[in-house]
Image 1 (cartoon, rainbow, N blue to C red):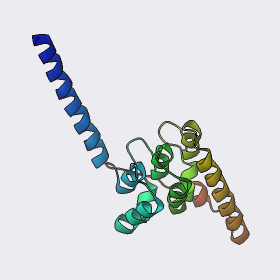
Image 2: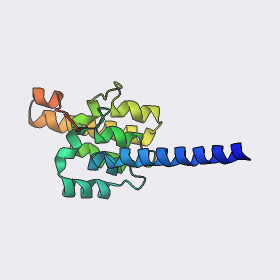
Image 3: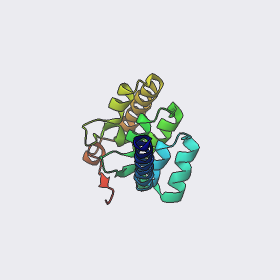
Length: 151
């Protein structure tokens, strides 16, 4: 009985610590990352976040070098429309590798999101076509600037 009580107390303490650690992790994420991680993510929530916090959030990386698009492509609740809303904010994000050398497309492939993969590829092709018709590609377009979140 004593061992069961001790095991239960340790388990409850560990669970509280893990829960608090998850809450702290989430609370320390940039706002757009939080919106992209949310189970209720939608184009509207992404646009509301940008309206509140500004468009630079699409260019900020978290502690793992992930942009908001990386986070969104791992979210099982994302839809092609949500992903495209995030992609519109920073087209170059589709080609940026995180600290694990993974791009958002890599995560879409890993987490088997065929609808999102097709939407992203179509959108990027349309963007490239429109971009090449109207101007030449600048070096800055190929080398997006990343900002790290302060730890």
